Length: 263
Image (cartoon, rainbow, N blue to C red; front, side, top):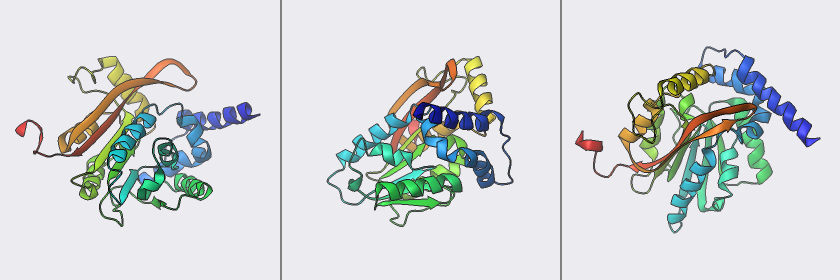
């Protein structure tokens, strides 16, 4: 019975991804029109698709555990959707170590799923905020951890989103982590490099769903933060044999000695 139920929910997601036209006059409207029909099936499908998410949370948890003696850890999960990242983070560290966790997303249907999850789990320190990540500032002002888990590629003004996050990232202890799909630039570092067909295929494919896989987002992180961890990989897509979508995991902190290469 569960197998049939899961298959039906997966087909609902695939129908939206493959056949639904993205409509709306604003970014919020477009996201809600796209994700609204699949909100309840969102977590199950993407658990087998977002291959970098667990790695991101695991590495972020390691960094937070290193700061375990510091009071008042604050995590801001930008584009946090259904709150599934919080659920997964609980597998790697004690969530009570965070004084506050903010799950921020502009998409109302996904936030509603997140609120139900917070209530069901009894998380007293988790707050779901329906807001544009480019405008959000936590009440605590300083965040120890900021994450973009498969969300930065879906934020058109990504530089504004990152700049806003940096405005409240703890300058001494803060970590910013990102995981996402990506394509390399034409000439890139060997561990990131893709050939022409790979760059063209994946960027064009994801663009149909309003997702931008261009290298500019990670380049902006490289420019504005000091990288402390990076992994590049590729993972399979449910019901699509053979193809593997490229993804990255990236962690950085506030730069200690100015911009890279002295520029």
